[in-house]
Image (cartoon, rainbow, N blue to C red; front, side, top):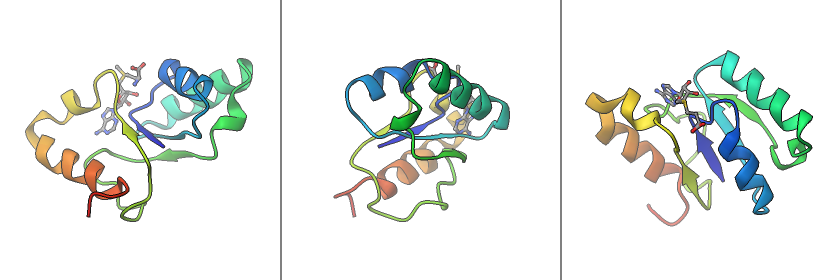
Length: 99
Ligand SMILES: C[S@@+](CC[C@H](N)C(=O)[O-])C[C@H]1O[C@@H](n2cnc3c(N)ncnc32)[C@H](O)[C@@H]1O
């Protein structure tokens, strides 16, 4: 699955605990570094194949139909409220079975 706007990883940990493989994405290199550090410290880094810098309005790094699930917990849409339709379209584009 894709977790966009993952931040420091409180939801990444929960998703990993549920058995998901979580591609962690965030536009902030600092947040990605915190997420990686948190995952290593709490023993769930194996559930994260990649920590990728990405913006919810531009997920072009990922092809269409890539993920079984996309989550954006805790605020990513609120940061781009004026572009929310673009952000939603991007999330749907990379979600499997939506095109
Ligand atoms: C309040 S934090 C929430 C982090 C995490 N999802 C949580 O609930 O703990 C918001 C996150 O959204 C990220 N963010 C800000 N603008 C974004 C954008 N345009 N696309 C994706 N994520 C964004 C921030 O870098 C930050 O990591």
